[in-house]
Amino acid sequence: MTDSPSRIVLELRGVHRTFGRQAVLRNVTFPVHAGETLVLIGESGCGKSVTTKLLAGLMTPDVGQVAWDGRSVANLSRRDLRQHRLRFGYLFQGAALFDSLDVYENIAFGLRENTQKREPEIREVVHQRLRDVGLTAETARKRPGELSGGMKKRVALARALAMSPEVMFYDEPTTGLDPVMSDVINQLILETRARQPVTSVVVTHDMHTVRRVADRVIMLYPLSRLKPGESQIVFSGTAEEVFNCPDPRVRNFVNGEAGDRLKELAA
Amino acid sequence: MSTLVADEPPGTVIHEVGRLTIRAVRAVGNLTLFAARMTRQLVRIPRSQVLWPVMYDVGVQSLPVILITGLFIGMVLSVQTYDTLKVMHFESRVGSVVNVSLVKELGPVLAATMLAGRVGSRIAAEIGTMRVTEQVDALDALGADPIAYLVVPRFLACFLLIPALTILADAFGMFGGWVVSTQVFGVSSHFYWFYSDSFITAYDVVTGTMKSLFFGAAIAVISCHRGFHCRSGAEGVGQAATEAFVYSFIAILVLDFFLGVILLHVYRLLFGGRGRKRP
Image (cartoon, rainbow over all chains, first blue to last red; front, side, top):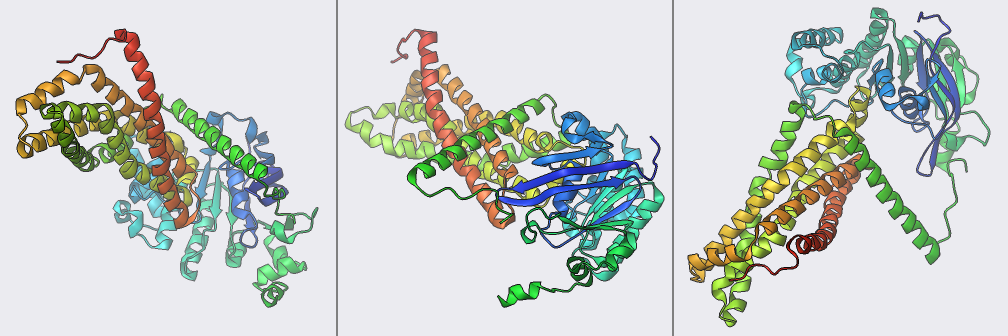
């Protein structure tokens, strides 16, 4: 299949998701096009990470559909689901490196589980991915507990890229990192895209990341602050547009201003 | 408010009973589905690099606590039964009481209880921590079925190694009972082993070991299930570990009762209700 700009790789169609008695997503619909970098922004708890996990098939919606290449995920068998998901790479918010394995084994994990590659080939891929994220071969034998936050994120990125994914999900890639390391991660996202044609979905609060990597931005708003019937997607557009959006909810978020929320403190 | 999907039911007794019943049915159904999902994955034996460390942890690392438990239970049983038997001038038969109790009941149940405490809690805490730190999601994202990768090796380790641990606990218990009976109370070593041999049948040993297989399976499934359904945060992980032990312990006792009844019927069916050999 050739990648035309309009080809939809991932799509949410009227998705609802509830945890216990807490509704997090309500009737959310949007597509992700091949090759684009879509950035999801919004306040904490508005459902950005849940949206990403739904798109990646790590969660199932209560109502609505998730579609990959136009096919509903609900219609896929468990095996097909697993096969399709191998096209995806996922950088988790807390890196989610396996504590019981060293860096080498973490990066090699997907290759060992899903391919018949021999050890020399696996070693080559692991060292290449470590170089791609700016880490040396000496890092390979370290345990996750011995790494700094930035190194963990980079190792997690190397692990996600080991299987050469077509779609990358980045869940708050710069959260908890210093500004310099945040910029390193942003640069790695750009380099990953430049190295191979990859579709990216990035969840972030970091407006610098939005400025650096976004082709398109979607802003979600917490359900608890919406009136019944209001769309949860309060903004969808380009990176330039989001910084000039007149909607006070978007403007406050982009500029990091509390706005009406200060009244809650006073109440 | 839009975040609420249903109103709280009124807090009458009937509502409360209904709520608890629904919760219990849901929990049992959830556990059954989890076990069924695991059973489907059992056809694929895990990689040795994954299986051996778990086997080592469950089997080798549990040895000291299991052996100490067995040893002292045998010793305590000897102390507790000797005086009663002496009143009836049956003190030479202390070996039979100690060892029958050990082989049929206390060995399997206490070995399983210690395993539930040491291994079950650890499994729940380990998988629970992996759950809350998204490592379970990471497994899924990397194409590894979390059930196949995390649950199957732990199930196999508990299921296959608990019979060996039980037999060792039995053996150390017998030895502990022998030490106290012969060295402290002066019972003849010959009579200790003679009456033990007379009262314990091969069926007792086999059923004791068979029971332990069920206990091992229950510990693994319950502990992994608790870990997978762990709530977030340190409190959630702690609660999962506690629940793993408590639910496993209850399951061991319930299984022990029903297996005891079933195996007694099987014995009668096989041996026609004949009494055991008695000297």
